[in-house]
Structure formats: structure tokens, C-alpha cells
Amino acid sequence: MAKKKEFRGYITQDLDKLVRALTAIKNGDRDWSISDVLQDALETWINLPENQELIRKHNLDKLD
Image (cartoon, rainbow, N blue to C red; front, side, top):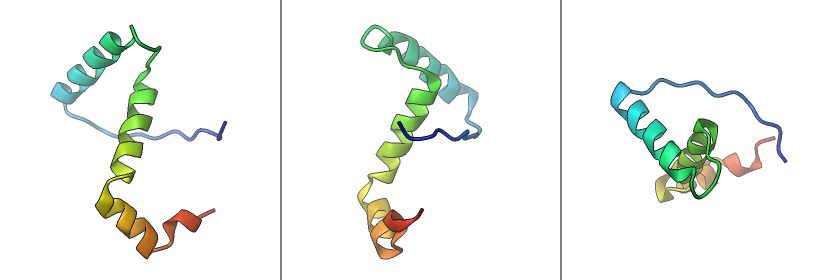
């Protein structure tokens, strides 16, 4: 497993309520945490075509 890093951000109260509610509901399928939701959301964002294009253009996939 890759070493984990702390990541902080701020979200609106409405988004916080939705994320926490959905996380609780999804715990029937799997033991989700807020960190799991953040990881999944960021991976989805990185995989957007426009971000993949920037990654390729700037060789960001080769960062150490």
C-alpha cells in the first residue's frame, strides 16, 4: 500500500452534510470513511480528460 499523506480542504456545510449522509448510507456496501470518499473524488477528478491531457502535456505522470 502506498504511503498516505494528509490532505486538508474546506467545503460548504451543504456538501459536508451530503457527503456524510452518503458515506453512512454506503457503509452497507463497504466500510467507507470520509478519507475514502476524498480519495475516490480526487481520483475521479484526475481522470477527467482535460486533466489527463495536462498530465501528459507536462509529464506529470513521471513525477517522483
